[in-house]
Image (tube, each protein chain N blue to C red):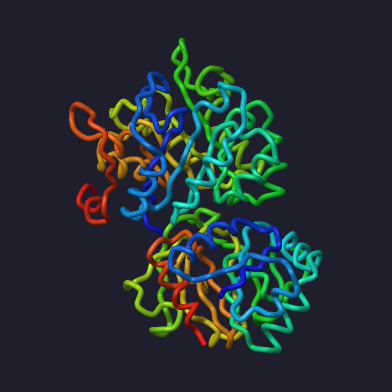
Length: 201
Length: 251
């Protein structure tokens, strides 16, 4: 069972749809009691950083998430903004992030690139297996974002993508995982990745 | 490197999917759910569904119908048609749409796009710009499904939309719609060079080579309707979508 955290940011129906398609039961909820009982969590998210942080706090789920993820070691997959919120901060907003991942989110810069980074791009997994186990090489995913993570700890890098230079498109720090792309909108690649997440210990 | 995005555009009407020529004479081409399932199997990059009857009928989006479609889309789904309020956008996102295209309301009141971008983020918000050559040969932005001439210049309007927070521009050439005569490359170049957000070119694609030509004219993505629903000289309905190899071979 995967618990999708509903904090009013973005398209949760897509994630639930894809999990259903791959035969993985899920529940979408903002109920702290349900999150306290979760064994696998997805923190989704589309939209602005500060709105995301504000919504998380307003719904009163930060504490229970922190206990479950940092205390009990339950695997959590942050998707897009949901991953960026795990960082210390973002150039997009003024509010501090959750700070569970030693990273900051910065805006794409550089001449000759379109921002937002939008469309299908490949990911270079740093090591085989894990989230990318069994996926075609190179795996392709759908991206749409104007900010990306900058990692303080290079060992947290799980996969890289190029857009005017390489940026971290997948990260992992222990039981904390994050992807900048949208697996729920990346057909067979996304299905494979979510299946792998469902099996990660 | 970003791959080249190729986007089927499906037009919704009362009975199902239709395809138009120059935004007129809609021809029935099939059931929307069925079409989306086929495009799923073909692993399309993304898909746009435009309800062309919403604005003419003075109604909003048919949320239940879109929810059904979105449930079948394992690729990004864009929706346009009758989007006039922040509430519409909110509900569209809730039923499973990633990108919301705004056309008439954005032409009438560009400030609406700013409100929408501030609330939902730029990456959700697409400015759909319909362009037509008028009686005196001037190419301008039209609204209300090609019925009303705003007299605005397409490149300037694209800049305005970008300034308001639109994250993408869906640039439709009404003159080329359904004609298979190729994209309006001058228009694409003019708008794409003026805007720094991605421009999706639509209207006129007649071959896979045309898709490359749109990208060559600086579009970030190539969209098409007829090319992906009709086949052969008699325009038999047959849904198709190029594989990466087909696309490469047409370069």
